[in-house]
Length: 487
Ligand code: AMP
Ligand code: MG
Image 1 (spheres, rainbow, N blue to C red):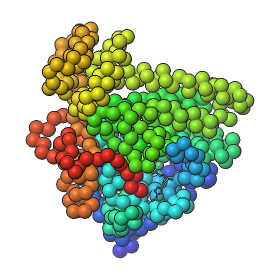
Image 2 (image 1 turned 90 degrees about the vertical axis):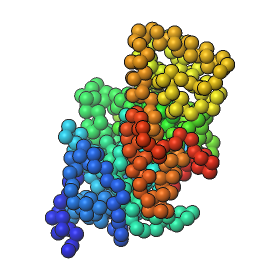
Image 3 (image 1 turned 45 degrees about the vertical axis):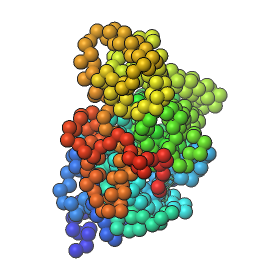
Image 4 (image 1 turned 180 degrees about the vertical axis):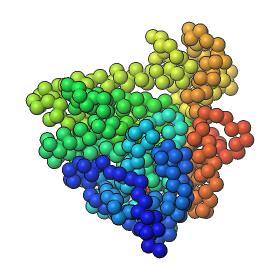
């Protein structure tokens, strides 16, 4: 039976992006896949999104791109971006297609996008496909981020396409269904900047404001306020990343979302041992996106955003620049405030005291000097334990300072400990485990480890007594020193 008739033109998506001028997108349908298999469907997310589809064939056909209703207009989005500091005018969705939006029960819109669904006019020399490995990786890491209460795009489905994708090796293909508050990026505004068309820029900014910051619509200068809001979102996001040892790996302006969500999980990683200079991405030769560079890079990306919308901030360019600078100069202060708050809470500190910053930094230094695991060390601290090592004066001193500081909280440690265990995770998607899950899935068709890791990382704070899967440290041969885009 013809697939169209079979589903009776069921189509749960709308598409507000189509109201923008058509230079912002290409109308395009996904390529068909020959032998799609539904590897994973995120049922709880589908319920949140009001997508209660019971028919698993329909789920498979929808999220493999094989069924697109005749009335649908699916699109690839245009954007530019600074990649590792170099401006590239023509990026865009080279391997992703936006099916459209769904509306959550509270009225907010969410984009539903297929990633790896074939070529678009933005594909340049790429094939528009994604190998299954990176698709699984994005699913795991994005769902982990969400469980850690870090703003992030989500993952709704994994499809294996049954097709081969040619990279350095021949690999099985996959498609990820990504869910995002929107796919507006700093790079979308940079794309508009080079169009040099004030009307289009205004339409784009108004679209972003309506979608993400409706409360600022009627302010005196909503466009300057848009910059303020974005700064608020980005400082919050990066402070959250820093608090769990997350390295994004490719913080290009096209990978910086206006919604403030973590987006585009490529060569990202959670640190094992704490090293402020850690770099994982195999393509980050100069360490531009190292762990400790992330706050500064986000500020740099914000400055690129400000440049893109300057003509709307003020018609007088000089004034526009000085107003934008005034906002962005506040970045370090705002970031630090958020970072201190979150890092303090990791140590059980709810109040703020003048010496907290030193206490936090001294603890980080102890971790880096002693090669300690970032996640486990914080978790152990919840049980008032650092290292099974006598005569480490530095650690003893630090513990004394911390004990003194805890007294000022005026709460018994048992209660503090409980709170600490709610923000210091036990389970993160450690690189060696993610690699293991991917290898089992891709080369052995074994998806059981995927289920096991998802069970742990989606409830990262609660200890599973009977778990045998999770290991903090890799066995020899399992170490991961570099992560790859794998696109
Ligand atoms: P990303 O590394 O995912 O941030 O992608 C950077 C740019 O390269 C985006 O414009 C992507 O659409 C494009 N791109 C990445 N991989 C492919 C591919 N396999 N085919 C076409 N375009 C791609
Ligand atoms: Mg990208």
